[in-house]
Length: 162
Image 1 (cartoon, rainbow, N blue to C red):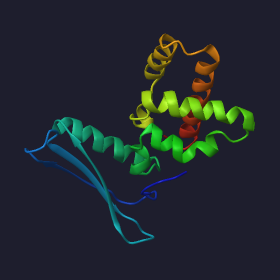
Image 2: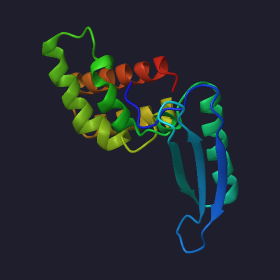
Image 3: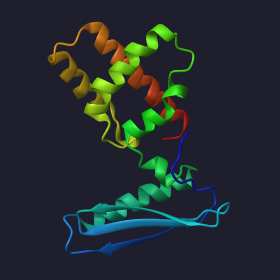
Image 4: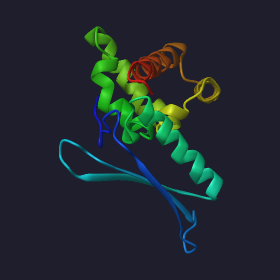
């Protein structure tokens, strides 16, 4: 599992919301913590349109941290997560199958879903993407290979607790 910043279980998080009126998303939600191994203070922040949205984001980070999930992994985009964990997701797969799967990942999954946080991928989002691939007249085999690699990456995400 590749992580930018890891929060060990039991580490205290501090959160704050800052109002910055000169920004398109004026509420900055920030979570900070000390890494006990490196003694460095790490942080993660995101801009939100209103204070309620910022509070919801902070609560989702706190909930994930209480479940042992680092904030960086809880907010990781699907493309970033998939690229970092692709070898784990495709383990046990025959070499001749890897190329079509990776092609489906690069050309269809990442452009359609890669910008979304891995935790935000739902059945509905996947259904709409699959329908778009069918409308684009991709072959049945191509769509099946694309779905298969997406399923493997999402199963790995479930194993990682995302």
